[in-house]
Amino acid sequence: MAAKLGGGDDEGITDINVTPLVDIMLVLLIIFMLTSEVVSKKVKKPTIDIDLPTASSGQDKPGEPLSIVINKDGDLFLNGKPIRELDLRAKVKATVALRGKGKAEAVLSADKRLSHGQVVRMIDMLRVLGVENVAINTKEQEIE
Image (cartoon, rainbow, N blue to C red; front, side, top):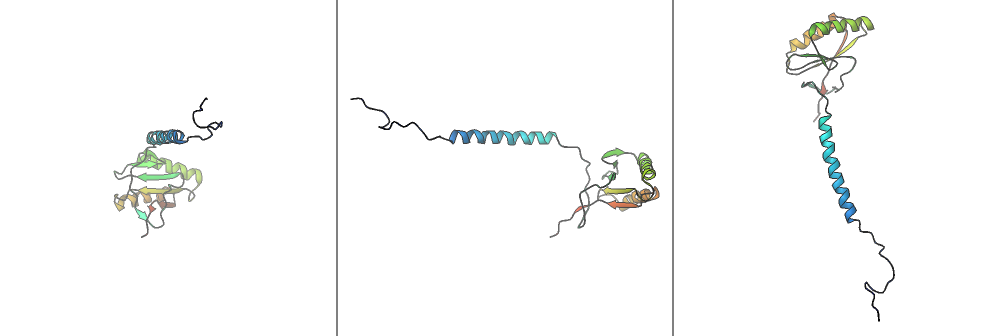
């Protein structure tokens, strides 16, 4: 008399064990999370270090083409690129000449640690050069 191992059923194994599949997927997820963090740190764009004052009507958008930034050290940037004051004057004059007086606009982003006089001096310079619309960039104030 011959005995069959595993019982008397002639059916094959129909259940699938998904535990190894879940383990592999979790390992892949961890690998993707780690590599994405490393890649995102390498891709960071260089930024200008300024601390904007807050205002309840503020926006974090630099605005139109004449985006002027003054950092805490008094360094000037036009559209994200460092610039000297004499060169800034020339660029502003060229923009006003191209667009026409009263049509050129500027957004001034000044660090809140700058003196009020420096900000007023920059606004005055822009208005003398023909930029009538000067907006001051702020970040949105959190309302409690």
